[in-house]
Image: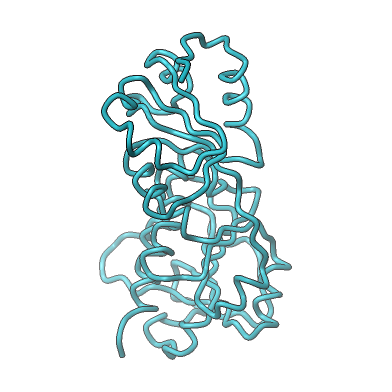
Length: 254
């Protein structure tokens, strides 16, 4: 295999263009690489540094990759989005998913109403994976789960969790399909303690999480406002922490 040693190589330029494409997402690191191997996910472009390939040749050759590039360590550093690159990364095509499939699972889902921090978004994807949620719906005004930082924060969960862009009309689709719609609020006024909600309603529900700082900025007819009870003085919880507690409550035995 020829080693690419120039950052001006046309293939390297193509990789850099595709890193910002809406049709692909960039991943890297040994942990994500291990998830790719475990799930036998097809990779569009696999990029491997000389150093990584020298010690992981057999594993790299097991990857189902349409295109595989071996590059110098210096070239890999020019592609990497991390401070200390581990020498392995790639581009995957965004999966083709539809709302009907998500609805048919009849499992709880998260709806991110403009959540801005990609780290929070990626963590929520990881939480959805941990608690067997059906998927994550995100608004395009917020961070995408397929952005580089969100993918990194998901720790490989993006490979297992269905993530779809949506809007308020999407919430209505879930509502018509018999899902309970819960709007998370940090305030108990005019809202119900989520611990008082019947367990069967939590198992087929769409949980709407608002923007950091401003919360949910719309109303949904027929939706129920809920809050997480807190005994301390903090005004609210981080949105990803909130998602984690919701995931736990949905899986908690009666």
